[in-house]
Amino acid sequence: MSTDQERSLLSSKEKVEANSRAILASLTPSQVQALKLARNGDLHSADGRSWTHLNAAVTYTRSDRFEERPNKVKSATATTVERLTKLDLLRVLDGMDGEAHPPRTITMAGKLWLLKHK
Image: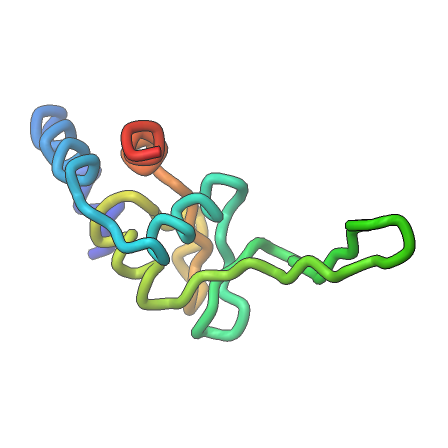
């Protein structure tokens, strides 16, 4: 049974308690970075070990007048994404149960954590 299925079986009081525990969780800097990355869009598994946005590519910005420098693709590790999912800060997208690594999105508890600890 997935975490989302377990959460749907909980009463509203238990859901509020789970969100409160998630908001009070302390995160490492890499977990905070992954949560901010998820806030900007859904995370998809790139190769099973790293998670990034769908179709993410290196972009080039003009940082000074004569030179373009690449902006690296931001990603998060699989262990970080799994930890955030267990803390109920990320959740599996609905309707994506058949995939080996279903995409993840940020929950309201994750958004509130970012607002509180910014």
